[in-house]
Image (cartoon, rainbow, N blue to C red; front, side):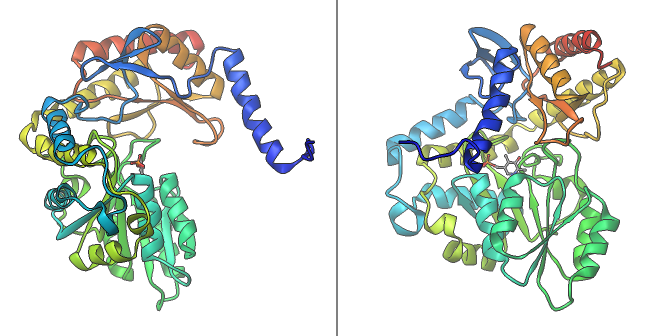
Length: 402
Ligand SMILES: *Cc1c(COP(=O)(O)O)cnc(C)c1O
């Protein structure tokens, strides 16, 4: 017997999403979870049996499939097996975990580092372990969902400041009672728009108001700065971020998240953060892959140069076709479409010509600002990017976006 009524709140939520899914599938506009069947070199993938240029990757340096990184992962499986004995705090800690954490600390110019099994878990656990009831967290309005969730979970007063707006951040800092602990937190590169947080100004404000600073480098580790060390190197600042967070699943072709900071902070997190104490350690192959990837980044600096060239080519080319690429300064290139339907149509047209891009629609971005979120990597060739732009440009005209 089914006691659930059709107007049950859970059923309403389930139904609303499934209606949207059905609409997409019925109209051949459903691009969620398309399976990649094979990796074909750095910038090509096999999808639906067709080889496509990959313009939806966060592997900015093209390290996925890198021989040295693969070899390190295989060696770690031979040495440790495919898993650990459980959580880090019991028998899950392996020497490769400590090696990886030392590599990260050195790469990030920090005293120490700690790793977790995902970037999402890192933000959740780190924010909620550092902050608590009575404290204040000030978060950029465009911050990643994992930061928002960490702030909510912490129980601290949660305040959002206007995106990258330093006057608004200062106003919010002024509103915090002076005896309260406060944390300012922001993405380094914003994942929907590709713009960079004004770090020098944020640092100044944090000093003026005695606030802690945490920056999420998911899209800047290996990408920003001459040697890929991230946002501090980009702005020529040294060790100005208290909590340097990042992920091992994007430019670093593995999985996991990290925080680099002062020794005392890392020690505190090792003994108090619940995602470390109560959740499985990184698998050895993934820890070894991540460890090797940081070394490859330093050994192959041409990748950063190539990424910067490709980024300029892509942004300037799309702009000259008449597209609005919004605020981007990085390899995350939003191609403004407006309505969700325009974004879906542009995606379909591009994929039909073997250019693998994906749309971002509401509620991930505000209604009416749907877009493609296209990315380039160090693995793309100049001619490949030219072809992708030609396809996107032709379709954009037909749909009436440009
Ligand atoms: C992807 C991402 C995360 C989450 O990292 P995962 O390792 O994928 O869990 C956190 N913050 C930002 C800004 C991201 O883009």
